[in-house]
Image (tube, rainbow, N blue to C red):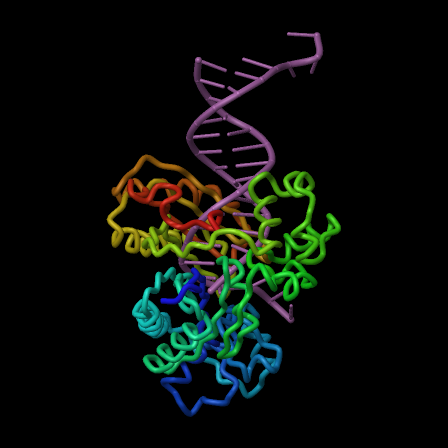
Length: 359
DNA sequence: TCTGGGGTCCTAGGACCC
DNA sequence: TCTGGGGTCCTAGGACCC
């Protein structure tokens, strides 16, 4: 250990993770445009989960309707989503990261994680982590290095693919200051438009935005949060406290819109049974229910209901059907979703497990 | 061109109580 | 009569992320 040891946040992000996992088990696909989404049938209602870099050249990206993606890349290989395969690959990646010396690992999703470390050479540490992941899983990743979680997360994009990039208070404004606000993590199309309405177009402008104007527009919490985001400031401690899920939900989009009451009720019961299966694994009681309805062509409505804490399936079913009864009759729906909120254990009170507002 | 599925967190506004 | 004030809980919806 030298006197230059400092705490760093690393953000590790696998490159085209889902497509890469598919290519690994089907090596003949290497170099071809691969698109993974839905059940792999581009005539169905579904969207792209991940496209390989070869497919991205044609303008295909995550979230795009599969139908459109197939049209853009006529000779693409289109594959169904295989959760089990990605779970297994993800578990190997995360265990490799946890095995790095001194690493505190906070998993963000299938294909990304923060690592908290103390070192005098974060780039060297990042390169060793990349090599370890490649050696163990044959998957490539990019690493962002930062002095806060936000800066590390944003840095990763500049390291892609297979690279390393460092973003700290020293170079944040040089790198990000002139960029549009939508490039920040947590600012999407809606918020960036509202910011533009306040005359805030760039990250630098957001960083120095008037606090009063921000809280007036977005509320006391989010207003200050967005301004902080513009500065890249915020938490710098990686938290490896195990995640405690707040609830579980299932939803399904119908290939043809449905309207029959009996059919809607049957689907709701089926979704609820799946949800309760997931909930049962947690061994925690249900304290709330939610029903999501997307009326055709595209208008979403949600109904929620708090209930007395219960494990009783009949009670939960009856309460769910009360929500189903609120669905407008004779109006075609394209999506139905059911969600159950669970009681939080005492040791996972607010502030204990990580939350976005803590970043 | 037509928009999945699984999540989290925040806010506005109404209901209700004292 | 132009109709308090504060607090809490609940519902619905918005926004974002992977």
